[in-house]
Image (tube, rainbow, N blue to C red; front, side, top):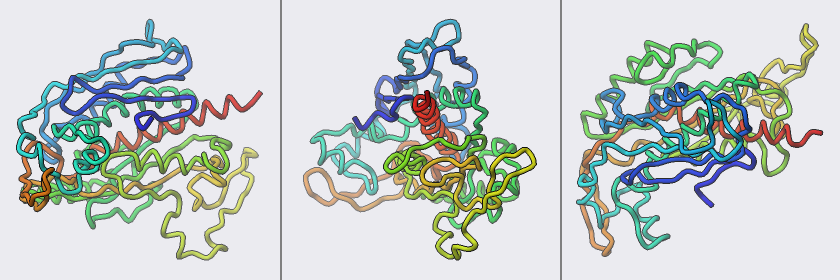
Length: 359
């Protein structure tokens, strides 16, 4: 099913943007994991709308309810069901496009595939679905904390404004101190002003989220079709508005000679295996090698803009789509916790798969 992900640590999300609510069922989470409700709510607060003037002004508390799988603060090993009820739907904002196909949205493709679609905010194709992923990802993060794995993402580019520093040169603890979620304060201020100017012009802009994962031991991942980087790529490309994924040296690696790109191994003073460089991005042969895993995720400009656009309607007639409602002028600030959540879901699954493969 297209709404499920994972082999052992599995999730299934449900719900629509303008329905009763959205939620997730987590299956395969081990019993006895500390279910930190405050942490999960905190993660949802990082993604929720209405955080600043450069995000959608839809007001959702995004408070979750536990329906099953938790007892006295611990997971029971049975399916964990979480629901986040919708509180601030304005379905009337979409009545004017009930028969129109919005440019670069899933309206047309959903209509062709299913013969019916929920035009209220896009229904299942709405980015609101990602709140369920963040809730599940928070549970995965808690599981990974027990393995000393830390995941941290940040905004590294908005439009043509890009950080020219690697993550090792940045203080990532500053990421959550500004609305853009960029750890470089000077660049964050410039990005904020730019996004706000784009918003005032009724337009949108894309950007890049960089993610760094520390503490993954060597040996996580599977050869051939279930390679760790392939699953990370799939997970990231499943996020709304994502148009590209690269890990390690990525596309820049094609400019390098093999003698420069190769990561030489050495034994450190603690007799641990390391590489002197990390162009591999912490993954070789689809399996983690113990170094930092890092990747970049490209997000397109938000498709809904406050400008008239040419399109067609369900009857094949020309139409002018008028932008209405509440939408992000740039999705990347709110995408940071989504990227982290999907990375956590991938790694939690591989963590459990790695344990199950050993006697």
